[in-house]
Length: 274
Figure 1 (cartoon, rainbow, N blue to C red):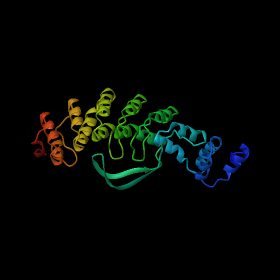
Figure 2 (cartoon, rainbow, N blue to C red):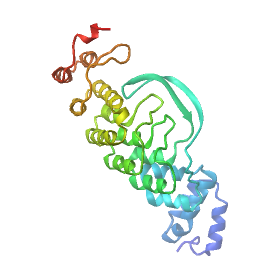
Figure 3 (tube, rainbow, N blue to C red):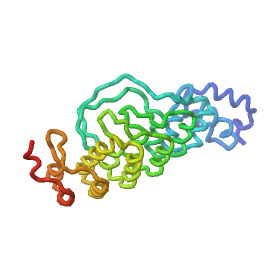
């Protein structure tokens, strides 16, 4: 037994109170099983007081529910309010098939958004059940459902829809969840979102499926294109400076999608009718 371990708990806690860094407390916690039981809670409290609660955000991002709960027990605040920050403008960027000036709100992403990006369903459900909105968004206004669609989290997509997450909230660049899933090629998620759109968003179904078809063609996702046209997506319309779906497929050199669009009635002469 080391001399440190022979000290009573009260003195060990007093030593922790004089620690000047998180790494110091962490080193003490790793020294032995007994010291871990004493200093591990101190480590989380130190992080809350001096470390901007980074432990809570790390746990949410990595799906570590044990660490997440320890951070909460140490006093890390978990806001259930939607984050709000000052609107900022950035450079012109290309995101998920669209090129626009970047807009975002200047705030730290909520742990809920971090957990959703990683597909950590237990933490997402935990925070929503505490009262947070299932439509919480990140600085670029990607909702939880959009983040699940981007990263291909099928189970989380179903869970969010069951918890009341809405599809009709666009990001700052105008993306909706179905469009994002289509661009990324996540066919199962696209099918889930299509079904939800038909059941709950009948008035905007045509607009969303058009947007998704543009994304699928731009992203060269033949399976998604097939899925969307099988659900009645229109193939003859203009978008983005009089582009047609055939124009985009041709520019991409994507013969399979070009032929698929022609099979479903795309008009190669439509680009002349402006």
